[in-house]
Figure (cartoon, rainbow, N blue to C red):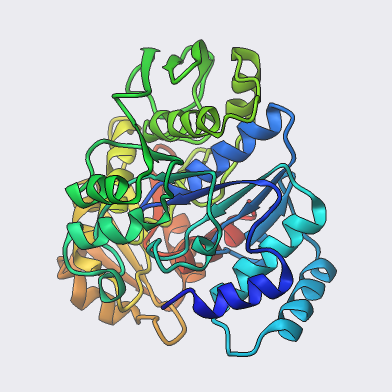
Length: 409
């Protein structure tokens, strides 16, 4: 890991200092939802946006969007050809990704580029750019081989996206002290949730779905908004993610209007696949990547908010990569699950269903093994009856095939 290779190519291509405003989003969990809210609110306010995210579920094109629309193959190929011509050393997969996004955003002259950190922060490829505003959503254990074995080490790495004199937005004040000390050392300007901006759910508190009866308010650096609808992204965590996005846009100080009509439109229209995505029906399906322990805990909290009818059962379709702490991920959901359907995942980091069963140490009678995610979904569909629900989680390699099998993506 390091920035030397990617910075060298970025300078040759002229994208190391973008003309557009840049918001960089890091943290352990919550990045995708925060990026989605930023994009929706900025576009509702009249800005043209470029959005760089990872990973993708089905198509690589999902990673780079302009105005909310995936870029076409030809535009990607052209960007990769220019990167190939400019490079002098081997680049990583993610370095190609980041450079392609920056090139396309420059070519399209977007007003605001929204960059999601892939891994860590300080040495992540998107950190080649000095962001105008940076957000850290949360700090939890993940990628310990790269980031360290303590939350203090992980926090310091993730806080490395902040810049001197520029806003450093924290979606939660509950972060390791190293995050605050890094902000101070870098000379960034802390903008902290529950101190510098806040939110209040005024009705329907505890509900995890969007609806006309749910209203909430936001108090920020300059804006005071009330009578806002719940985000179209399900889960109570979205009040926090949406508020951090609003605080970041206020901190950007670019003159975008954040009135109740604009923000309400954005909240109703925001979309993000595979993050507490609810597919309604006689049997409700809920899909969430939830690939580490902190994300699994949040997922469990949101599942718990959606009360089942009396007698309803929860089936879990689960696939977890071999290098993840599967036992801790599953433990967060275990009190909610009546039957586990464990799926084999392919690839060098994949895990067979039988290996996963050994890692989870569940009661054999509570487990069914499936050779693929698609087979696991078939098993769940055959077992569930109206009033039951199916939760799908553990990896992007689990949720992606499930979304395709459900024909909703």
